[in-house]
Image (cartoon, rainbow over all chains, first blue to last red; front, side):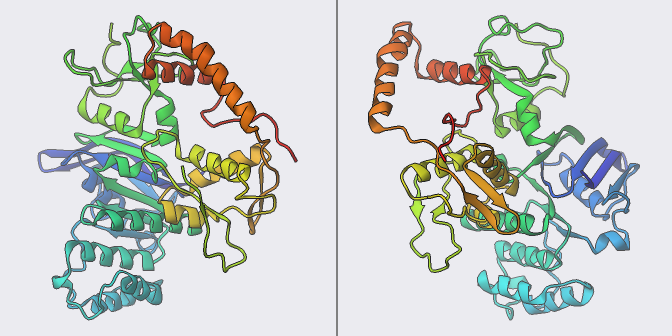
Length: 292
Length: 153
């Protein structure tokens, strides 16, 4: 399988602050990758690196096997919808569409206009008068009209209402089915990712603590519903505890296994949400003792 | 899970069924799709020769990853229920064998009077019972998808 994005040992420092620390991840072509992490974890920095708006302090990123992010060849194949829509300087929606057309060799003008009409966004409307949701939709429209091979979305859902979110996700999945487009998007809302994402990159304090195919990740994690002794787990070789429940809470203990266990009644399957929360809240990967 | 017969089937190439998802059921999405096709066949909404909805239609209406639909259709193909024709779509080629209402009721009653009775007497609650059933099926190598023996042509 070819990769759309290859991230190797990438670190990024801003003066004394290290935003990303030795991040390694492969994003296969045609995948839908969810980038999850708490505020300030480094999600936007990583997206800016992938799209070439920033360069790594150390490490390397390649797009489509051999292109540098931000290179002319890469720019024609990647669309980035940043969190603060970059179209805000245009006078009207129509101007924004015309500008996007003249800046891109490949741009489906008709598709852009049709999409804006469907969303009831008037071409004569001033961009500065658009709501947050409309502005996000304008940015997404301009990105989709370029028929990118890689679409990068930073928090695309945050300003949209529930119906618009569902419609947008459906629309994006339709594009994936049609053209095999690769999508990377960051989000806080894990429940919304579960149905559309095939891959997950989870960032905590600048480090990628989890990266991989979601089905495989879920297969390798379980929730321990009893004690380790009851479940017959031993310390060596059976995995590591990702989250250790506080004695007074009923929070589940998530355990990572090298080999997926089967037929153990005290080990329940995890959901993507369980897995993400366990990594975001608790110990770094691979550490921790099995609970007694 | 509900099945909607497509009311407006003006287009001859439209599939008779439309999928629905139950987000809170805990049943994996692709399994829900497989079950809905099997149920539609059992109650006659779908018949041999019918086309399943195109992958693009399904992902747009349900907002799910295309691979999930592919996985469901591949599962139906493995079971011999559906077959893909490249560039045309996925079609129903066989029905799963139907269980008569009496046979179903008999199995249900046996389950209630037998195993479920013992489990309740032993003090297992709802969650214990679900966990035990799930892990047993898993350990026996069954997927969480409902399997119905062979396939009647």
